[in-house]
Length: 310
Ligand SMILES: Cc1cc2nc3c(=O)[nH]c(=O)nc-3n(C[C@H](O)[C@H](O)[C@H](O)COP(=O)(O)OP(=O)(O)OC[C@H]3O[C@@H](n4cnc5c(N)ncnc54)[C@H](O)[C@@H]3O)c2cc1C
Image 1 (cartoon, rainbow, N blue to C red):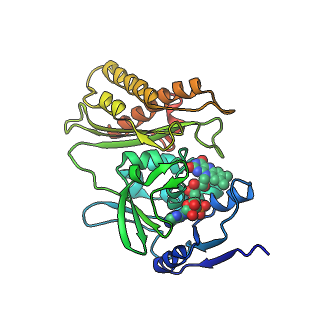
Image 2 (spheres, helix red, strand yellow):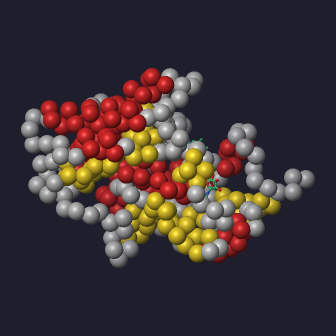
């Protein structure tokens, strides 16, 4: 007998009570259970299924214009959301390339974020979009920026009894069109983990002639996914009106700045040197795709497919 226990929560309060008593939450199980089957780490002694908790699987806009994505929203549901396609296409770029159809149908946004892998695909676009984690535990509800949530590979700042209820994307601020994109280096199109990834979110000036604001984040090349302010500074102010030379120079500079910020490892999938160069390439592609979307150009999801031909 393993002595393992599994219960099912019918509410957030049930889940929090079980977690306070030592149980680990399981949503889609595509990290926790599949990882255990592959010998990554043993199944926890006590688990609480959270997949039937009502109200955590919807995508809603609150009265202030913030988008609330329930923790149980699957990658497939993200791909089906016209609201997110319009407001956060970079998140669709990420969910579109998570695993296979089966992984996307079962795997949740909450599980991806709470797994805290530096290679998670939704992390970089969420960070650039200013996402906040809504955590509920025995002592109430709090909000944490994702830069505060992820503290090291596989570890978050959430207490053992804190359930992620939702991810909130703040309402866009400032005039001017916005665009976002996420691109990853992958050796095949399905069932791949990012070798290197990058996301960008941009806002154009009201007349569309310049980049007014930019956010850039890199994936799988630092212990936790981080924003790169030096790369963002290279994009802000870039002139979009001429023949494209100034924009190209800004994109290249942003790529170089992101590569400087990366601290990649060498392993069987890529050397440190190759990863470093690819950070520059992925960052350039993500920023180019985000700017193209902000300018109303068609960039298909996932942008990883679109960008390799540009
Ligand atoms: C074949 C395969 C391919 C994959 N490919 C990719 C890929 O390309 N890109 C990628 O990013 N990931 C990939 N993954 C990883 C995984 O599918 C995703 O991270 C998925 O989003 C996890 O969601 P889940 O609901 O299955 O998480 P679970 O396995 O249920 O949980 C993951 C972790 O988060 C915790 N958790 C879950 N929900 C909550 C919550 N609401 N509050 C607090 N803690 C919570 C769990 O306790 C556990 O520690 C892949 C997995 C498999 C099996």
